[in-house]
Amino acid sequence: MMKPNPTDALQAVKSLAFQQLPLNLVSNYKGLHFVEKIEPLKVGVDTIIFRAPRLQVCTTLRDPIYLHSRVLPETVRARPQMINCTTMELRLTDFTFNGNLWFDRLEQRVQPERPVATLLAMHRSVYSATLRDISLHGAGLMLYLGDYPDLDILVNTQVDLRFDLTPQTRLSLHGRVICRRRIGAAMLYLGVHIYPSNEQSIWLENYIFRRKMDILGELDQQVHQRMEPQPVKDLYF
Image 1 (cartoon, rainbow, N blue to C red):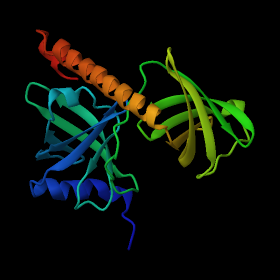
Image 2 (image 1 turned 135 degrees about the vertical axis):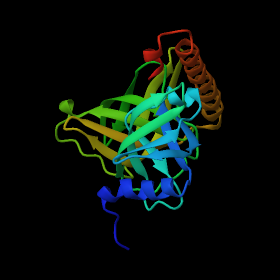
Image 3 (image 1 turned 90 degrees about the vertical axis):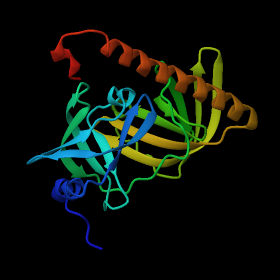
C-alpha cells in the first residue's frame, strides 16, 4: 500500500469538508485527552473553518491539534489559526499527515500538579528523569541527555522507577520501556509500562481521579474568566 504524501493531508480533509463529513478533533491539556466531533463550515485555499467545540475544549487548543476519521489514511496534525467564541468558529491550517493511525487511549492519563523528579534504574545504573504524566499502567518520562550524552535506551528495557507523586507518597514501581522518542538534541521521552501492586493500583486510581477533577476545574475557571464582560477584540483566543 502506497504511503500517503504529507502534502495530501489538506486535500484529504478538504474532501471530507466538501462532503460535510465531521472529523474527530483531539486536544491535550495537562495529560487529559479531549475528543470531540467538529463539523466543517467553510473551505479556504489553505484553511478550513469548523464549528468550534465546547468552550472547555477550546481553552485546551494548542499547536498542534490532531484530527482523525475512519476514512482518513492517517492521523492529521493541524494548527489552530483562529478561534472565535462569539460565532463559535475554529479555523485550522497547516494540515499534515503524522504517519500514524489514531488509537484511542485505554486509560486516562494526567500530568502531576508539580514537576516530579524520578530516579530511573536500569542496567545497574541510576539516572535522573522527570515524570511528565502517569496513568494506571503507564508513565511518561523526560530525560535530559546533556547529563548522559552516550545514553541509548531500547524498547523492552526493564526499568525500576522511584518518585514522590505527592509530598506524602513515595512510589517504587517496576516497568518496561514500550516507546522512546528523541526531542531535539538534548531530550529523550520514554513511555514506560508500569506494574503497580494491588494497593498501589487503588491509590493511583484515586490520585488520577482527583487530579482529573482538578484539571477539569481549571478549565471551567478559564472559561468563566474568558466569558466575563470584555472588549470584543478579546473574544478571540
